[in-house]
Image 1 (cartoon, one colour):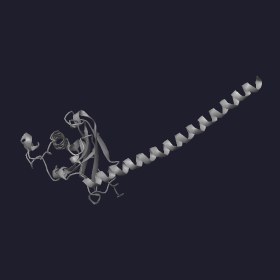
Image 2 (image 1 turned 90 degrees about the vertical axis):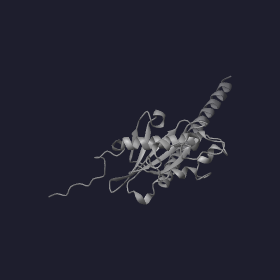
Image 3 (image 1 turned 135 degrees about the vertical axis):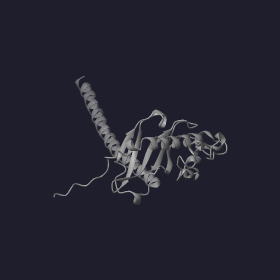
Image 4 (image 1 turned 180 degrees about the horizontal axis):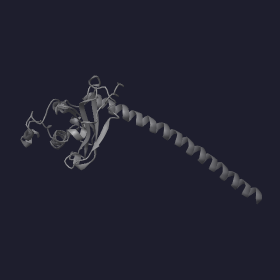
Length: 216
């Protein structure tokens, strides 16, 4: 009987040891994978930011020069991270990581870049669930439609024409897909309106790179 219990105890010890080793291996893999995923996400964001604001046009670390803004009229009321590009401490552009909440298949995540003069620097879709072959034409890999925002402003076209053609605006929709373009046009317009009204919240006048005064 004692040998039986000894066998049970040995088996239990071995199982516990294997479980401990297995847990350790999984934890190590998870830690390594988590770091790799985080780095891949960082590089992907940087590529998208530089596709909107060319790297040669700014000299700060845009990935870390951020501010979070919150407004009912922006991104469906969600907080929005804004990446700020500067050159010699002066504003170059702001890139809003915003959302078009009314996409056909759900929210569409966007980066909307606004130059310091209020014109659109560029727009990129970072995540969506739109229908393949229809709604996914919002991606630059599928279509150049989203590049049509470049250089636009609230003056050109006039604010009241910031809509798809079906709604009386100047922006094309896709054949068989109007909801996704409509949602993106609206989101870009809202971003421009927010920036025009809250430019100092994005780039506070005292919030710029300064150099220390030389001793007299």
